[in-house]
Amino acid sequence: MNQSQIRNFCIIAHIDHGKSTLADRMMELSGTVQKRDMKSQLLDTMDLEREKGITIKLTPVQMRYKEFILNLIDTPGHVDFSYEVSRSLAACEGAVLVVDASQGIQAQTLANVYLALAADLTIIPVLNKIDLPAADIPRVSAEIINLLGCTEDDILKVSAKTGEGVLSVLDAVTERIVPPQGKADQPTRALIFDSYYDDYRGVVLYTRVVDGMVKKGDAIEMLATGATGLALEVGALSPSMSPGLDIATGQVGYIVTNLKTTRDARVGDTVTVKRHRAEEMLPGYLNVKPFVYAGFFPVSNEDYNELKEAVEKLSLSDSALQFEPENSPVLGFGVRIGFLGLLHMDIVRERLEREYSLDLVVTNPSTDYQVKLQNGEELDIKSASSLPDPSRIAEIREPWIKGEIIVPQNYIGAVIQLIVNKRGQQKNLSYIDERALISFEAPLANLLTDFYDQLKSVTSGYGSFNYELDDYRAEDLVKVDFYVASEIVDALSVMTHRSESQHLGRMVVDKLKEVIPRQNFQVPLQAAIGGKFIARADLSAYRKDVTTGLYGGDVSRKKKVLAKQAKGKKRMKRFGKVDIPSEAFTVMLKRD
Image (cartoon, rainbow, N blue to C red; front, top):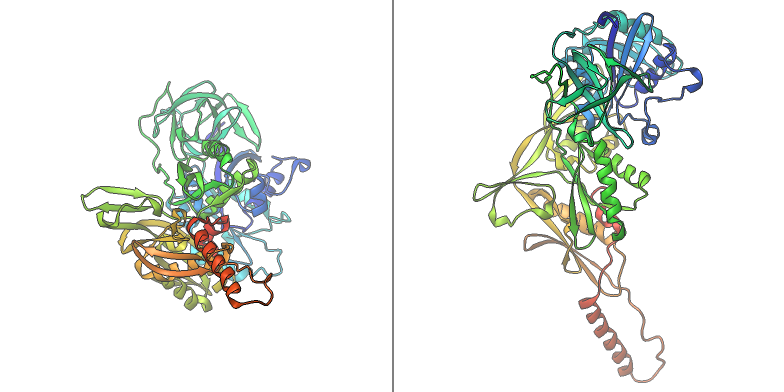
C-alpha cells in the first residue's frame, strides 16, 4: 500500500460532545460496518462505557473511503487518561476537533487542542449537533475561529446523529491531512498507543508503524522495558481483527504477542524487530505514575483471595494500576491500589464489583506524599497511616496541580472563592467570547474528594475543569487520627494542612456520629493530631428502663437496680466492641 493513500487521524473533544457518534457515522458512510451490525457507540466495547457515555479504552478502526485508507483512533476524553490521548495523537498526522454547537468550547477541548498543537497535527474543526434547537452556530464558530485562527469556511457543520455533513468530514480528512512520512528502508520502529491483555491470546498491542515493517512471526523487542517476544499475528482493525501478513510503514494495526502482562509493553513504548533492530526510541515515552490511592477491602475476609486475584487480572491489561497488600486491624486484609485519577478509581471499583461479583469497602482516596527525615532519608508514603513518627520528620511535600476552569462570566467570583477555599491560588484570568478561562494552582489532596461536584454546583453545571500534575511542595502538613471508643482506626487517618485540621476533625467526627449505630454504652468519637485531641463527639447510649417492673415500695429498691445497671454499663464500656459500618470509611467522599 502506497503511503500517499494512507491518512491517520483521531477525534478529540470534551466529554459528551459527540465523538463516538461521529465515529459511528463515519464507519457507516464509508461502508466499514454493515447497517445490520451497526449499534450506537460501536467502538465503546465495555458496558460501563455505554452506561456512562464515555470512552475509557481507546480503539482504532480502519476505513476505506474512495481510494484512501483512513485509520481512525478513538481517544478517551477524560482528564485521567490525558497521557493515553497524547500517545494517540503521536500516532496521527491530523485531528478532527469536535465542538458541541450548543455548549461551545470546554476545558478539555482546550487541553486536547494544546496537545494536538504540541504534536504538530493538522486540526479540522467540526461543529457537531447543529440539529439541536439550542445550537448557537455563530457564537461557537466565533469561539473556534478565536482559538485556532482559522476562517469560517474551514469549520465543518455536521450532525453526527442524523449523518448530515459527515461525508464532508471524510473528504476534509483526505484533502487536508498529510500522508505519513515514514521510511520503509529504515530499522523498524512502531509506537504502542494502547495495549490490553486477552485471556486466550496474551498481550495485544495497538501500534502505528513509523519506519520499517512488522511481519507475522517476527521476534520483537520493546525498547523502553527491554521485553522480548513474538509477533504471533498482525493485522488491521476494521473494527474487528482482520489478520494480514504484515503492517507496513505508516499503517495502524494490531500485534498479538506472547507477552504475559501489559507492564512489558506500556503505552508510548517503541516496538522494533530483531532482523532490522532500531537503536533509538520514538520520543514522548513516560512511565505513568498513579497519584490517587485508596484501600480496597472485601466486606467478608473470606473473599480476600478473590479480591487479590481480581486485581491481579485487571492489572494485566491496565499497566497504570499499581497495588500492594494492606492490613487494617478494623477492616482486615485488603489491597492498596494506585490510580490515575478519581474516574479511573471509580471504573476499577465498578469492574471489580460487576465482573468479579465482589462486595467491597473502599477507604477515602488520598494522594502520595514525599517525606524527608531528619537524617536526610527520603520516603514516598501512599497512606496517612504509614507516616513515620513526627519527631523524625524534617518536611513533608504534597503534590500540586495546574488547573484550568472555563465558566460563564457571571460565575467568576464564585469559582475564585471555591479555589481559595481549597488553598488554591488563582494565576490568570482571560476571556473567550462570553466565557472566562481561570488558570490556578492548588494542592491535589484538596481537589480529590468533592471539588468537581462543588464546581458544578456553584456554576449551575456550566463549569468545566481540566488539570495536570505540576510539582511537589513542602507545606505544614499534619496527620489527623480518629478514635472510636478510645481505639484508633487507622483506615480513617488523613493528611491535611494544619490550618484545615480543626475544621476537618470536627466535620468527620460529626459525620461518624451519623453513620455509626448507637450502642448500649456511651461511645466517644475523637479526632487527634499526635497526642492532642482537637474534636470530640459522643454517641449516646441506648437506655433501657430497668425500673418498669417495680411498683411502689421504698425508693432504695429503684436506686439499687439503677446502680446495678450503671455497673453493667461501665463493664460494657471496658469490654464492648463497636462495629463500624462500611459507610464510615467513605465519609470524606460524601462530605455534604
